[in-house]
Length: 481
Image 1: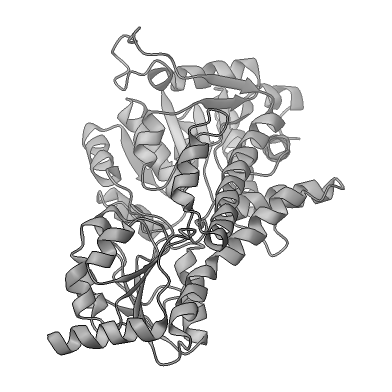
Image 2: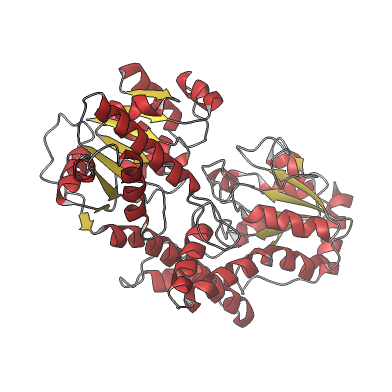
């Protein structure tokens, strides 16, 4: 099937590359000429494990191409994905101007195609996370571009709009695309039938579309709904996950006060089939481009209809408070942070991505600098301090380089490689061997054996030594060396 993906951000590029891998002929369109040139050379503009290799393979096979020519992509394709950004506005609502511009552009292309004698049926897919009701106004914008030059009934028969939200996790987006929990399709019967054909290899769990479905594997559930319900499913899913994380973080804060260990609590409640173990990892809060934006947009929509959405509002407030926890724990031990040097292990909002959007590290850096601390950082994929929010941060070449001269370390991002660090080596080069584990990724006992004073999130059974004892221990290590 011929497919056009408009927008090559995170969602658009992953979608286009994966559909090309399934054997579809995919044209990815973007108005950034420099970015398109980069992708035409086989270079992925974002970091996502496996994406660059899959992209190059599809390009070599001739199933994937990149262009700035919207008309060429629209004219040659049956399915048109809108995958442009919908960033948040100060009010909390989504900025839909890019979606609207693309919808008008598609309408103009369809008008020109009709004038040239082509009247092929198109399915326009909202892949961007858009406010509830967007499907209707996308359809209206396309129609407005086509009429009155074309009879409205004729124009309406030329296309349908489908809501097909994505549920990708940065860092595992390729796996999530090929192994979806469900596929949500909101639209007309005719349009949904086309989308079922497009996704047949995924639904039948055969990555090669020429293979027969494996009867031993259950097919992927397809949720068919109206447009508004499909749009709501995306917002409700992200809002629930954000709330679940905020909930376990609130439990962690109570654990700190009563002497319980949130990791044990999470294991105990996660085994309840009604709750599940995913998204019960306490820490310094969620970040990224989706959760805050989507929760804020849903709250804004609720307020438009006279409802305050108090649970969702509280989830956001809890997350903001959680981001300050790492610095508070430093202050509890070190008291005064002015003049101290603090090293951050990780900068991105989660592992296996280079995404710094709404990363908790940015708020931690701001708080530390405001309190007069010097900030160093190491991240496996971030190599420059020129990114927004990293001004004044010294970027280290390795964890060992990071630790030298530090008065404390904060584990900010749960990169798997951080578990394999020789922490005894790090402790020996620090002014004070203090570790605040913002992701509860490290073993407290092992860290203490390595010479660290370990502080987790919600791990109330961690020994709380006074700062004077910690300083004496550090001085003793320095004398022994």
